[in-house]
Length: 447
Image 1 (tube, rainbow, N blue to C red):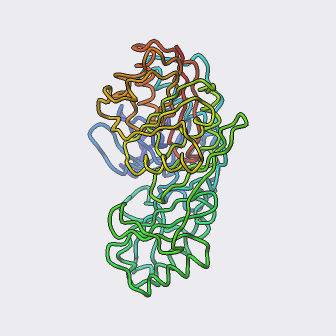
Image 2 (cartoon, rainbow, N blue to C red):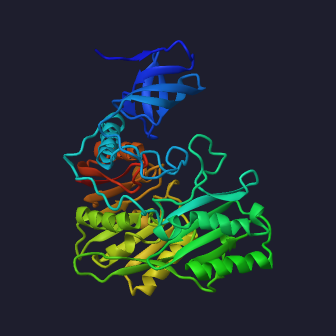
Image 3 (cartoon, rainbow, N blue to C red):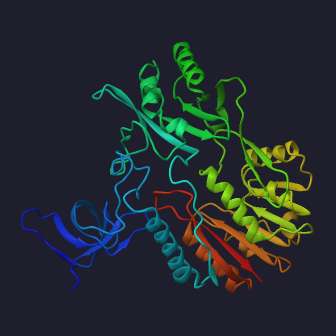
């Protein structure tokens, strides 16, 4: 007999409930008197005691008070900060169950939104579960009551506050082991109160920290940051204004770069980037994702390939090693400039890059009028439906779509299948962000 909920008389805001699903943000979903309740800390299949934290018109939010019947997939979180820090939401769920849940979300979106189903499900693509994050933003807050400067991600329950981290198991180990040290450093700075955040970015050999500061830093503070960089092996940048204001403090000319292998015996490609540039957060998964995309796209020496939302050329330049011609299109001028420079640096002459806002009609552009054999899409969360209004051409026989949002992928899959005559040959998830509810996926379409 199914148990739905019961109300203990002692506390009106506490209930017992069955958790019937896992929400898109990693919270458990229950129903009380027919109303959805999103429960932090609860897993699908569990029976819990919960406390209502906030009521809304169509749903409520709650915290788990006690797990009465645990899920067999529940595990002990590795991080002592889990539950307070908002950086991870699923450390209490086994990695296998995390993957299965993400595949379920993708399948449900295909069915519900796109009205499509892949002929084949690809095996989930996974990599390291810890110390994978090479790009992100740490918040900074001086807390006089604690006598410390806190450095970390925002708190899960109250994003206005910074979680009091001592270390972090998901970010690059050189940084994750020095979170508390960073807070101690900031506590010695005269201008600590003017520093709201630290961006971090890691290449193959260098970890960069970008200190955003609202007021000019004193010579004392600049020397302290320089000494820290020299002692701990970081590259330090300062950001007094917008993203174009970023300048290196030490060393004078830092270099961030990562290397990718195009496969099939082709020479490696090295991509240089700036510390605030978009790069795939998970470096190990990025290498595996590239190999996966290459296998699905099946580049041939006489192919002409179009890569949309190309960024730095993460896919474009490795593809150029294996095809006749490739064009990359991206909306951000700085990324296109660096992609073009990376092509020259790697001696690649068959790649062309174009700046274009792909959320506007570009059907008159030369690259959009050109017939391409194959198309690679790697859009942001909004997806690529505007592009699919005029692409792909009839000459395009294969599309590989890398997605960071299953709903937009499902919608666009429906467009490719029902309006452009493609078949969704295969799809699967890629665990780009372990221990979070984020779903990264890849899909292969063919005429």
